[in-house]
Amino acid sequence: MRYSALSIFKNALGGNKDWQPVWREPEPKKKYDVIIAGGGGHGLATAYYLAHEFGVRNIGVIEKSYIGNGNIGRNTTIIRSNYLLEGNTPFYELSLKLWEGLEQDFNFNAMVSQRGVVNLVHTDGQRDAARRRGNAMRMHGVDAEYLDLKTIRDMLPFFDYSNARFPIMGGLIQRRGGTVRHDAVAWGFARGADSYGVDIIQNCEMTGVRREGSKITGVETSKGFIECDKLALSAAGHSSVVAEMAGIKLPIESHVLQAFVSEGLKPFIDTVVTYGAGHFYISQSDKGGLVFGGDIDGYNSYARRGNLATVEHVMEAGVAMIPALSRVKVLRSWGGIMDMSMDGSPIIDKAPLDNLYINAGWCYGGFKATPASGWCYAHLIAKDEPHPVAKFMRLDRFRRGYLIDERGAGAQPNLH
Amino acid sequence: MASLIECPHCGARPKEEFTVRGNVERQRPAPDADPDTWFDYVYLRDNPMGRISEHWHHTAGCRRWLIVERDNTDHTVFNVTDAMEAKSKS
Ligand SMILES: Cc1cc2nc3c(=O)[nH]c(=O)nc-3n(C[C@H](O)[C@H](O)[C@H](O)COP(=O)(O)OP(=O)(O)OC[C@H]3O[C@@H](n4cnc5c(N)ncnc54)[C@H](O)[C@@H]3O)c2cc1C
Ligand SMILES: [Zn+2]
Image (tube, each protein chain N blue to C red):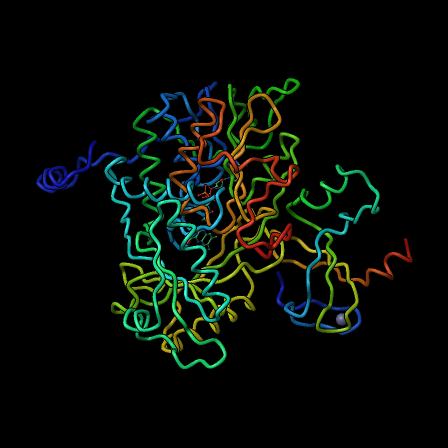
C-alpha cells in the first residue's frame, strides 16, 4: 500500500483496520541469488537498491535479531558530508543527495531534517584545519561555510563563551547536514525491499558458510542451510565474526560507543553541534530530548553496554560546553558495537573469493552513509565492479598503502 | 568492562588508569621480518569474541605491563597477572 495523505484519510474513515504489516515475515527459501547477512541499515538499503535500481529481486536478508536492534537503531542520527579526503567526500555527498530525495523515493517518512551541523573551533590550528576542510568540501561541490564568533553566539546563545583555556572562536557549518529518524530508515528500506519481493528473515543468525574451493555455495543459519549465488556481508560490529566464517581476517576491531538522551525540553538547540575542545556532540530530537554522545570507550568490546568512566567524561565535556546542561536529567543511555577500521574509513569491496562481498568498517559514522553504502554495495554486487565514488574503499588499500585516514591517527582503531 | 581492575601490585584501581595494548597473542615481529608478516601485525586483527587475554599497562599506577583476562561480551574480568612474571613462569 502506498502511503499518502489520502491513504491516512481513507484508513481513518475505516477505523484504521485495513493497514497492512510493513513487511512480510517469510521463512527462508531454499536458494537466493543474493544473501545479505545482517539486516541493519546497510543490509536493508543494499537489498532495496539491488531490487529498485539494479533489477536483482531474489534476495534474502538474514538478520540474527530483529530489524532495528543493531546500530541502525542505536546511533545519534547525524547526517553530513563534511569530509576532507578525496576517498570520502564524493561518497558522503552522494549519500547526502540520496537522503534529500529518500522519503519520496521509498515512500516513507524518515523525518530528514537539514538543520545544519556545526563543528566548533577553539584554537588557531583548529580554525585553519576547519577552513581547509571547508575549502576541500567546496571544491567537491559540497556546501560549507566558516562562521565567526558573533554568528555562532547568536545561533547558540546558551554556550559558555568565557572559557579562557578553550575559547569558542568560530565554527564550520554544513547547512545541508542534519538528522534523520534512524528507526524509520530501517523500516522504510525494509518495506521498500519487501515490496519488490525481498525476503527479510528475522531471528536467523548466520553461523557458517559452505565453500567449494574459492566459491561460496551457501550459508549455515539458525534456520538451516540456505543456498546462494552471492553472499554479501553487512554485519556492522560483527564483521570480523562473519568474515572469519569464510576464512577472512579483517583490518577491524570491535569497540563500544555510548549515547544518551535527556528528558524532553522546550526548543533549545536547533542544529547539531560538535565540541572541538572535548569529546562531545549534541542535537535535540523533535520530541525535545537532547541526544548526545562522545567518544568510544577505548577497549575492545562486543558488549552493547559501556563504562561509567565514559559516561562521566561525556557529561563533563557537555557541561563545559553548555553549562545549563548540569540541570538536565538524563533519561537513557545505551551502547552499540562498531567495526573500528585501521584508518577510520569503511570497506565496500569484493573479498578474495569468487562470490563473497564485504561491507564493513563503518566506525561511528555509518548512519549518514546508509543510502550511499546500500547503493554502492548493490552496484558492486550486481555488476562486480566498484561504484566510482566508492572506488577508494578497497579491502587491499591497507596492504597497498592507500589509507583514507581523515584523522591521521594510523593503525590504532581506538583513536579514530 | 568492569570499572575496577585488580592490579596485582596496586590493588583494585579504576580502569581509566590503564592503557590497553591489545591481544597478548599479537606480538611485534622481528625488524627484518617479511612485509607480509609486518602487514599482518600492523593491520589485521583476530578480533575474537568471548574470553580474551590482553596486555594492559598500569599507566597511572605501578607502570607495569599486566595480562588482563576478560570476557568482552559481558565485562567479566577473570584474572589479572603481571606480564613479566607470567613470562618467566612459562
Ligand atoms: C551510539 C552510536 C552513535 C552513532 N552515531 C552516529 C551518527 O550520529 N551518525 C552516523 O553517521 N553514524 C553513527 N553511528 C554509526 C552507525 O550507527 C553505524 O556505522 C551503522 O549503523 C552501521 O551499519 P548498519 O546500520 O548496517 O549496522 P547494524 O544496524 O548494526 O546492522 C548489522 C546487523 O547485522 C546483524 N548481524 C550480526 N551478526 C550476524 C550474523 N552472524 N547473522 C545475521 N545477522 C548478523 C546485527 O544483528 C545487526 O542487525 C553511531 C553508532 C553508535 C553505536
Ligand atoms: Zn599497578
